[in-house]
Image 1 (tube, helix red, strand yellow):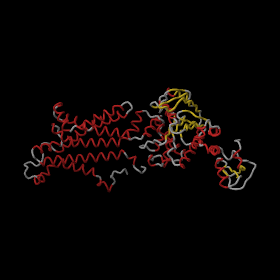
Image 2 (cartoon, rainbow over the protein chains, first blue to last red):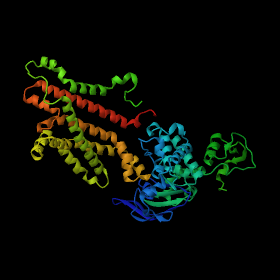
Image 3 (cartoon, each protein chain N blue to C red):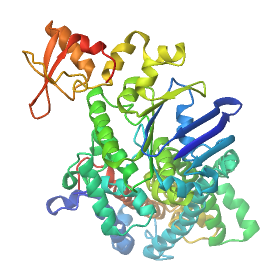
Length: 310
Length: 255
């Protein structure tokens, strides 16, 4: 859907992105990650032409993005940013309606879309439609920011550190929402973050950048188990790589259906990382596993954590 | 409610109707105060200014202020917008310097230079006042637009607004309260300065003051000055009310 071909960008002589080649396919949740100055934000903003690339090609559905009018291409891509950038003088409903208004949808269709999105992001429409941004909490503002980005039913959603300024609890809740929205809508999402755990939790593909160059791109499991070099290992958190790998897999995927165990059961949907924590905290080496409805899925042994993924 | 005290029991707390009523009563009924002024200034033969009616002076004064401030607002906001656009950015220091110079000149000097060039009457007064009122408006327009948060600007662009849509839908509405503060300052300066314009032959509330000063008639000076003062207060209060109305979305409660 998006393809970078040997793209470079410099700001006043300082290289921001250099020789970047990258493909993001339809339906992917790509997370651009790197330290500050890695060029991840620049890379994102080149996609919707907030930053124009100096050389190379950026293709959107096979066509060079310069062949589109900037406004036209931006209305086909949702855009959400860290400090939300909500319009303070507009109500929540008017904010969410920004892109549909620009696309000149029928008023009835716009209103229905606004309510649908408020519902999707867990904000009661009757309660929040007419509020102003400053009357919302930080987490609610960010939800409205995401709803606004989704409103025009974009082909691609761009998010620049959308949850950077939120407290850990709100942040985790919104990450779950995003994972759910991605599963349900199948939309292609490109997100920038500097939080490796956010990237591991959400991405179908992680793109690790450093000093404007691509270091490694791959699934979270690939990056953790086959890091391209020492820098990747360091960035992923050298000492915790194993634990993070466990965080990517569910208890259900390793449970032995024909075994039984005693004690407080593990949720099959929980990660193996949580299972490890339970084994250590309870000083046991075997725990029962149940699904969301409480039905038994068998048992998990401590050494199952070491088994190769099935 | 919106903070304007217009509900039943508290209407009298709003100073705007009071100052307007005082202005209207005094400008229509100054003649009835003749005994008062005679008592205050027993040495004067004619204690009430009678060359023109006060209501005509108030209206003439108001007209000069409205036209000059309106022109200053149009030009000032236009300049402010122009130098905050991508293309006009480099002219900003030049415009700011020119406009600041315009206000450094004392208005009397501007009038004194304008009169021999353009002639006497209202035109030199209008030109001088318009130039004189530019600075606060240009400054507040620039400040108001710059005060729009960078994230809001980026979101507007990133969501696909054109430069014009961003200006009209985001930048100007958010900058408007600050711009109106500038127009208010400028208009109030002009209410005072317009009085001086009667020195070049424009008919304003400055006429009784100038005539009174040159003829040692303190009563005339007082009559003109009180009306100029009331006019300034009324306009100031009206602007405050307008400013509040423009920022209704900032109020804490959902409406």
